Image 1 (cartoon, chains in turn blue, orange):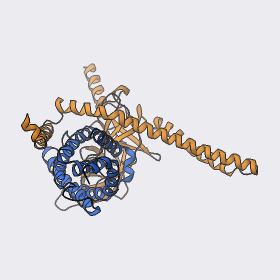
Image 2 (cartoon, one colour):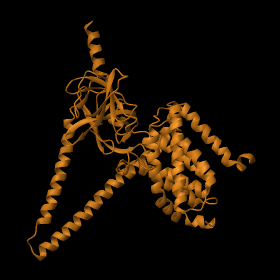
Image 3 (cartoon, helix red, strand yellow):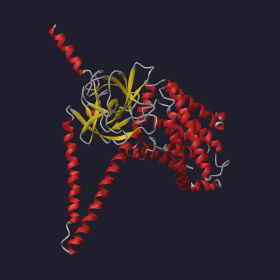
Length: 166
Length: 290
């Protein structure tokens, strides 16, 4: 399991550094970029359970908030909550078909966006128009790129998943 | 203790939620700032490392490309001793690169103020906030509220202002952010207004409080008015792309396309213009006269 922890940390760190790099803006579509770290978090929740996913979400969220102009916790809390619930729709419940992956990431991204908007309205400042300009396009973008990413992660964690007979 | 171990998922979830809610409630206090500072200090070296390695990989790749080109040229020279086309192409490439570098060097002088050139090393990782992190900080004399400009072709325009400074990095709030309000005016009619990032049109800004009596032609330039003390007067900001007039409002609104594209900005210049410095100097002079 130590190797899983190390690989998870590397994946999350690389995702966070990549998506905060200026050149990542080159792949903006409809004004948004995909949330690679969130897709990885959902993968961890989906594959290794709620506790593992929400802990990854908490640590990644803190680093993301520190690197962003957002108040500490604003990007963390929605990720933690979604990771907790994503653990319940794990591999034991839904087998990893392409459709399932797309659906899970799309719904999870929508919920994350909705929660972020609510918390931003309470603790910071936001516009409801963000649902159309940020939440929806980001959810679609995340869902589209989730499939190849899940495939790569499956290959990376094959040794651990095979132990759990997935 | 056994209870927490048995219910680790629920217990940790409650802890995480409480932590986030408390930290969001205590915005910008020493508690949250110190946690953010530690996390940011942990991240920055990795971001810089990634940025430097990417640059070095580019250089190495360029080296390989040059080597291949040279090999090709040598082969051609040995075989026929006649074709210098590739060399000429390479020279053109190097010339244009050289010109670009010279232009960049001159830009520093063109800024018109004492400035610190900087590279963009990171941006907000999410889509909700738009800030830029540069590789210059308080060690280079950068202070909060200093204006930041960049060049698009030969046009010098405002990028935003410094909102956070650490030792070797600073955070810039760009003009497309709804948190940044700038006093601006239309270049031709000198009509003043207040500009901020548009929340409904990502990547664009809007000017409010523009008089309805003003005719605003399309593509008219928007410059800083100097009001507010942060930005010096006359700095280019953007072009008006659309005007919105509603019957219910006494004013009209102009939608502005910034000259500097947030998604493409790589090099910026922090103007060492201490906000309000002129006002302080004027006050001091007045006091000395008395």
